[in-house]
Length: 274
Image 1 (tube, rainbow, N blue to C red):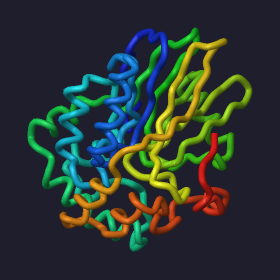
Image 2 (cartoon, helix red, strand yellow):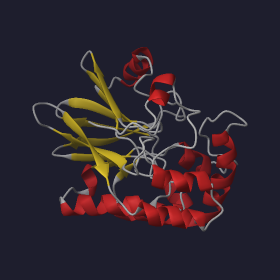
Image 3 (tube, rainbow, N blue to C red):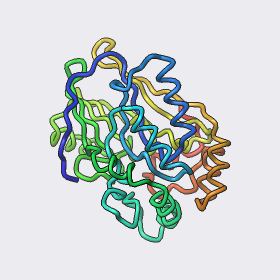
């Protein structure tokens, strides 16, 4: 990644944070409705990338995000679409199930993205920074060193610390790994809001986003999102997309745990509680 950071100034009041839309239009529409009902303006909404992904409606999701006018960075999928690459850039092991599935959904997604959307993608920043409650906040996808790096709650703090040192951030808002979590050490906060495009491997069809507030400094909370996952799943089945991922939307269990460390693998099927 080129590490160019777009500064969006100072933000205040409640922020809505999410990522991993993964072409799931039904989830995106539900989240937008919540934001509108609760009067959260687009200027206070941040997406950590991967608008495009496994599900059925990549172009519609790109258009909605663009028209919504929220802050958004490029995930690895957007970067590879921008660069006209032949794979998603998800850093899957070659020959793994995730790799094989990506050879189905990525070409489909690439075929659906319009030239207009592609031009918009080319202008997405890879990193954002802003000030919030007196803290420097940096938004990235995987890590500042590698957009496709998987950073989980169990990932050693030393790896997270290197990102804080590189960015001089107090708070990092990250995406990519697909699971919501927060970790605080030595006055630093790493916050991953989770994704809205796929369940969190906890045996429920719920998907996740987060809120951040200025209550007594910086506060945060994870929220589950209910949406029409049956429709999203059915639309996937009607297109040349992996059936396993369509089933995941309903069952809430990932097809495999290939990308997960041992600690997160042991949590498969256990309902998340925050």
